[in-house]
Length: 446
Image 1: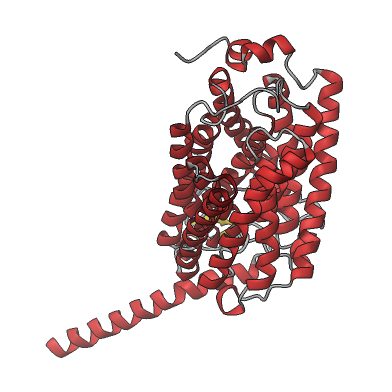
Image 2: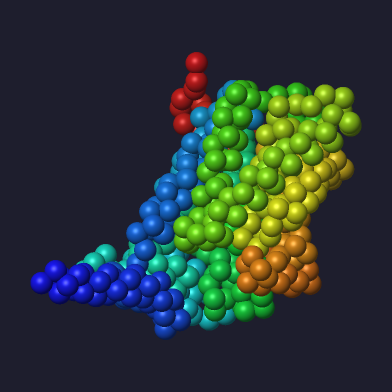
């Protein structure tokens, strides 16, 4: 009898082992069979991957509210603090709604080379266990529910237009901002996301590498920010009156939240709780640290003192630059990308702005566009097949950069031009002097 139970127990253990071994294979088979979002068995999902992606989503949303809101609010003048924070909060709300209505569908469903389809409008077809034992997935993330994947991607759609607002801080009408955010999210962000991240997108098909958004998020936002800053014109008194930051404590707290949230941004883009996510987290942290030191030294040499604002700006520059490379490079690549981005973004935020005389209020172009371009091109240099399964190519990366810069600049210009002709872009000189907190929102801080 004991022998029979022993044999039965061993057979049960063997069956469980075979089942456990088959789950990853089932998930892999699912990813190979499904070329567009579809239904799979609930058992093929990974609880660990799902938990990590839920955490990563929360971290990326933390980057916008409160991270970016505090980072930007600390750098403007006291009379514009609430208005600046409102920009990030409003972007979160508008981008979230539009993403669910149509943005996700045109970004992440198969369609043409240039824009996705409309299969997921209003999230039609996203199954939350509507059928017994079934759940929908996206082929990019075959081990997590589609609802988790689309929410993670929503967080990217939220922060990108919010980043742009720093370029025209202290002078755009709030009504114009709302319309711009909505139109830009649908006409600029979603198509570029489709080109680069959807497997059927034309830049993805050409082999352009962008692990977590150097092109889709940072170059896109940075170039759009420069266009907006130029079209709105300089702030009153720019270059003639001092415009010191209101509260650098806010900025340091905001930058710190950005740094922590960026682990979800980059490591979460592995869409799995695995070694690649761990390496992405490591290189993200290293690049930020090196870039902060590089900016600090460059400022120390040229201006005589290392500022706190410079250190945190350098950290953000490194985070931006490592973003496209984070799933493709090792430690050496991270150190070089951090060093180059820290120096390049310091030059972009100081010398370049002084030479060209554009009023990019919070250095969106100097940090995000310059850092994104540096990161995208160096991804082509340091991408390692043993890490990400692909080799980099600088000429291919250059195509991705050029196309994104061109499309973002032209599309943003057209959107702003239409808004300017209809409701206008800029507040009145009187409203600007009073501050956007009072003139646009009827509130002020003590």
